[in-house]
Amino acid sequence: MRSIDHISAVMILKNAEACLEATLESLKLFKEVIILDNGSTDRSLEIAAKYENVKVYHSEFIGFGPLKNLAVSYANNDWIFSIDSDEVPDPTLLEEIIHFDLSDTKKVATMHRVNEYLGKVIAGTDWGNEIIVRLFNKRETRFTDTKVHETIVCGHLKKVKLKGKLLHESYTSVAEMITKMQFYTSLYAEQNVGSKDIHPLMIILKGFFAFIRSFLFKGGFKYGWRGLLVSSYVGIDVLFKYFKLYELNYKRTLKKATSDNYKVLIDLERLKYPNCGLGQVSINFSNALTKIEDKGNLDWEFLLPSENRKNYINDKEEVSFRYHNALTKNGMIPVDKDIDLFHLTHQITAYKAVKARKNIYTIHDLNFLKEKNKIKADRELSKIQKAVNRADVITVISKFTEKVVRDNLTIPPSTPVKVIYNGVKSPILEESVQPKIDDSPFFFSIGTVMPKKNFHVLVAMMEFMDPKYKLYLAGQWEKYSYVHQIRDLIEEKKLQDRVKLLGPISDQEKSYLFKNCEGFLFPSLLEGFGLPIIESMLAKKPTFSSNKTSLPEVGGEYAYYWENFKPEYMADVVKEGLKDFNSDRTKKEQEVYEYASNFSWEKNAEEYNKLYIETLNS
Image (cartoon, rainbow, N blue to C red; front, side):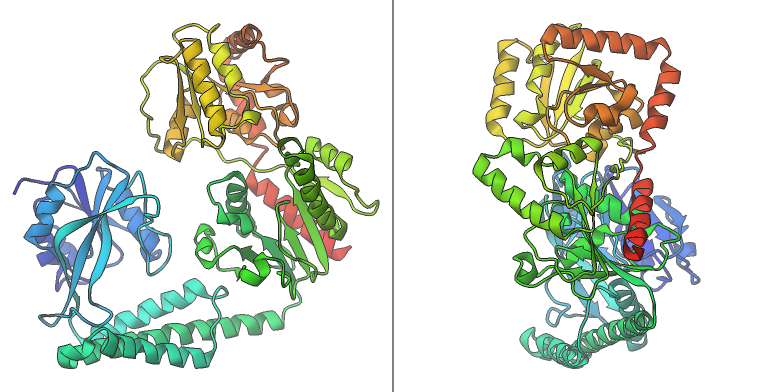
């Protein structure tokens, strides 16, 4: 077999002297093997030192998911073969890995893991027939950040099944089983406290049926005393993890029952769409909230669309969770029972919130008034008016949005409207990836490709720019008729070599485009805020924007504005803007960066935390 140069084998390690040598022997073909040790006290590190292809790093235990992601970060290759210290790939699987097509990064490889106990393969019980993802490209995916039961995120990636087997010597003794069970069940309970509830009777039933499933339905009885032992382990594991969770929840409830803190429910329902604008707002806002050191006398609870969205919250220790179900999603029962203050963080809602003592309602925009026909717009406006009538405070994301709200809705005289600007994260990452573009100087724009983004005017403008410049338009294609309109215009102007529609891009590609563009162009007609122009300033780039809606307010004096969209005029604004920016580039870069840094999620979260306290005490 030839060596494996372009895939790194990666493992985390602690006290595995009994099996590590066999694993490392099986990985000799790999040019690079990464080991991340988290506190081994046996001979494991001494064994690892004998292998020239092994690089050892060290970390404290931070949870299995975070630890594996850290280990992957040390690999020089993009392709990763993740392996445990007690696993051995057989020759067939190694041959498959050697010949795996690395040109398609949008796929992962699955393999059959065979579990053994004391020299005998256990093909039945819950241990049997495991198909797991272990080969992936780190630029496309990663492990979930869970403390235990971590998995590789691969919902958007194609799975390819490899032949061969990954041999796994799970445990070497009953004592080892018990030790690891204690560790894993404690991690599970700590990970899920406050977010999962279960009745003690249900725990007993779950444990019993876990044993029956493993021993009878999955054929554990065929493996004699080993099958009985493994099935018993499976049932007891369920009992322990849920009773530990029940105990932690009970202590948490007891503590809250004696607390005088206010209960604040924060709506993060838009995490249903984590990659859209409001989904990103939910992620950044919630994580900034959890970092506030002095939150006063508040207990936060996050309302999520489903339990798996909890993975987007980094610090879960001081937060409780509740989840939508079929009844709450459709407004049949209220979501805000036993709550002092409910913060509805966006105007798109079909659910019922009538129980909380106080309500804060955030409106991002009323763009639908321009985008929908009058009947649909009036229906949407009526829903928003009902939420406005219940609100004690209304917040908006710009002064422009405040004006639109006051012009189209009836605001009760006693209800204050407060402007709290969104936060913006820098688009520049530590690691950037060049999209499939050449090295010519270029302008850049990003946004959902739809008419209100007005991208077509940039195509016409490029006719009047120096031919050395190219234009890249990135973003999801929502209105295909508009995409075709842009493409037709590109052909009409014979700009196929200079103007490209990139479609959706990764964060790493976005980082590259912001970092290397000559200037950022944003001719949008309709914005409630205008996040991309602040991203551009955080990237220290000259920023060109339309003067429509909220954009002049958000960009301030630090952007260059188009008063109209005549192509030659737009080109002149860009040329003069570049000349001005480059006349004292270092100073200009610092000015735009310092201005844009005012739009931070930390500031946004602090303002809301202060508003929660003020509203509850009023």
